[in-house]
Image 1 (cartoon, rainbow, N blue to C red):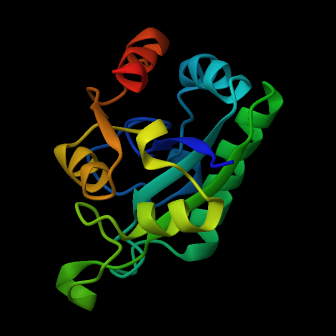
Image 2 (cartoon, helix red, strand yellow):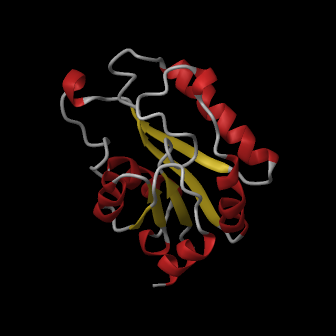
Length: 165
């Protein structure tokens, strides 16, 4: 049986948006209020999967080790409240440094990889993001997209309504 997933942008959705790259672990602040609605979805059998552009790596603004530390903080915060993030996919590329790639949103490479790896049914899944490129990437992979404002609390019922539409 195929899996269903909630794909999540990171900055502005799961952690506080700084309107710049988050380069230091101490600047990484988990939006704790996002955990409760996502735990409800997790309890209903949805995988929680992060899909995030991290072009600051290519620009040498922070390292993959620092990124891993930030993701560990995020994973731990969710696990402490009984929800598990299955995976954090990230694109380390930046067009000004590495040129084009298939994984950077608004392209759908990371979502397609997750769908293949976890045997996910795109029709039963959504992507929640705070930028139009998140929705564009979702739609390119056959997943419905939900656009929220940066740092806006995820509305459980709104997500369910989209999933059932």
